[in-house]
Amino acid sequence: MTNLNLLRKALGSHFTSRSATPNHGLPVFFRQSSRFFSTEGEQSPPESSANSFLDTSETAGLVYGKLYGITRNVLKTDIVNLLEGCNLSLDDVKVEYNRSFTPTSMMMQFPSWKAYDNAFRVIGRRGRMYRLERADRSQWDLLSPYNGKIILLQGIPRNAALDDVERFLSGCDYDATSINMFFRASIPEPIRMATVLFPSPTQAMHAFLTKNRGFCLNNQILMRVLQ
Image (cartoon, rainbow, N blue to C red; front, side, top):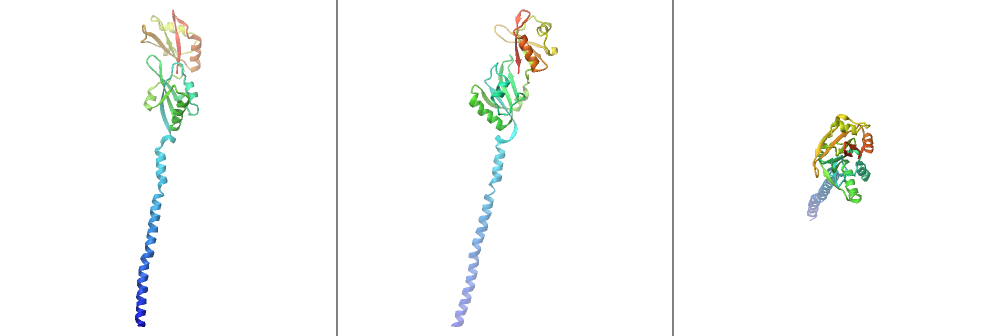
């Protein structure tokens, strides 16, 4: 009986040690598995980085907008001052005119999406008479900037010659080869106009101040500086 009991003890300890091995092994496996899945779950920061990359509101790059609601008396400086803090300069604004040189909108070039969004908020808060919409780079490229160097003359007599316009502008510094005369539809009859290029905005403004509402032959000439 003693030998039998010893045999049973030996067999019992053998099975106990074998069964203990899986019991200790399984928790280790699951602990390793949990660490593996935990590591995979911790890889969300790269995904967040990708999302921030797709969010272009903070990304540098030129963004274009078109401002509607402007009138003939609105200057580029008025809009730049209105959008102070949006990193706009006068070179970042172009005025769009129709065939009769009536301003229809202003194109603006923003340095980033953040600047555009800021301008959108400012206009909604302070410039409710205006409306800002997104525009394409192609629209910006098609517009010729006048930059305050070109003056529009309106009301030139039908029988006026080039020499008559030059006499009207006597005393002003301008490019005589740039004078371009044309007709535009008006009521009750077409109106004759001309555009003239000046070396600088200062000289164009001087001509406007000294010659506006002067007479060419018997017609009073209205002048306007194109932006």
